[in-house]
Length: 332
Image (cartoon, rainbow, N blue to C red; front, top):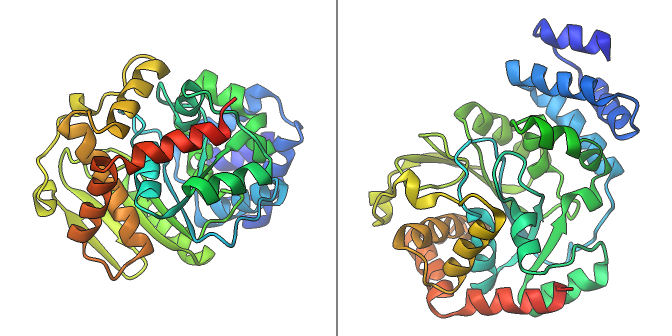
């Protein structure tokens, strides 16, 4: 590890095989927490390369618990985290909105590392029991079109560094890896990133993987469509910058999206969105993210139609019914 840290601190790069071996060694507890923290710090000082990202991804998928849900044409909606905005659980709410609209979703999530509430926090607030049981996941997919995978149960390397990540409480290359290692290997993914450089990195990575993707970045730093200003979306065949006005939606303020001081606060906002009693800003933000997920799955659809589908899922109560059925199947 010492030689690796020296190399990386000199802005030199690992090849794909070296990166793969490094992460395998981390998962096997060959390095102590101080060394892992130093590694995370080095990657804060310089960008990760496509080869390094690919090697880390290879290692995690090799070691992950395989889950075969390939007969469901599923999407995952996820953000990298690390934007420092502490928003409520927008992508998780968008997942249930999307499932309520009739699309299959396989959400791969974790506890919040750089925010108060990650997807796993809000699931726990609803009494969801994390499981690796494929029968439970299939029942969930059949009954309500959504399954949830708590990342540490499926990715040993992520579990091995959980304490370091939590104590550092800064974004790391593990945030970057998370969206790429859903063990179900979903057919589609909508990913939110906190910088344009990351958007480019993921675009190259997704092209290499060969799945249908959308990478979104709000130009004021959010790792999701925040509607606080302009945002960019990269698709396999095009890139475009949108304003909220182009979607016929009003702009939001940063305070509109605040997730609260505890997971319970964030869960209350999440529930309000599902019940269609949230503020217009909270509701619109979820609808916008769900709408672009629809367009990733169905690129022939106009964004106005995708927005209408997402809004109808919330307004009709189908998103809430989906959540309630999911809790019934996955609850303790």
